[in-house]
Image (cartoon, rainbow, N blue to C red; front, side, top):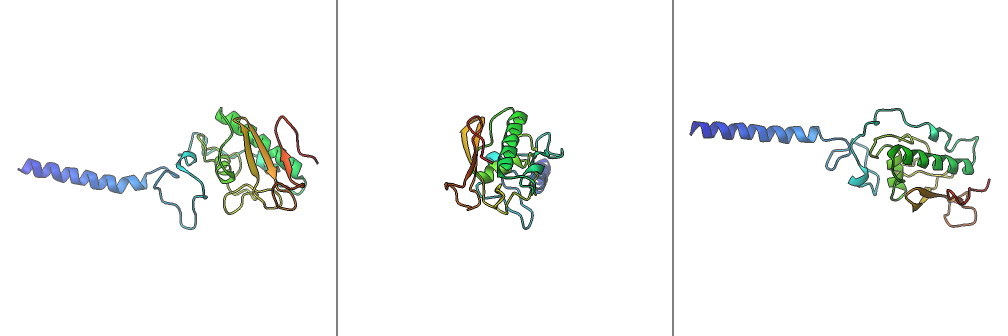
Length: 179
């Protein structure tokens, strides 16, 4: 009888210990983990693109995005920079472009990828409060995946409306945006 009681007591202590330990040691961004006060997961972000930090998570982010949305450049340059970032992403991940809507693609480019590497810093001025990568007029870019390795990038242009005559588009391999 004493052995059974001792066994149950030890089992109860182990279960309570696990209940205490698991929430405190869950990887950042994993399902069920707490977020910091004042922060939230961008809409549309799922467990599929919310991964644990990869082997490059603590490395300095790429500096390609430093040329994005600078006063000395133009939208054509911004589109080429974004295309270069996609090329770098595909090369580093030995795979294809990130998929999803703007917020999911931006999350992948800012470190929510299998490497945990930031191709664009999370605090880049071209990223709005909703976690979307925006053009120089503050309108979210439209990303259209043509294939696993081709991403069409569209800016709404100065009128801030997609699918109008002033849109700027880069379609890799087909045409570059007019200057």
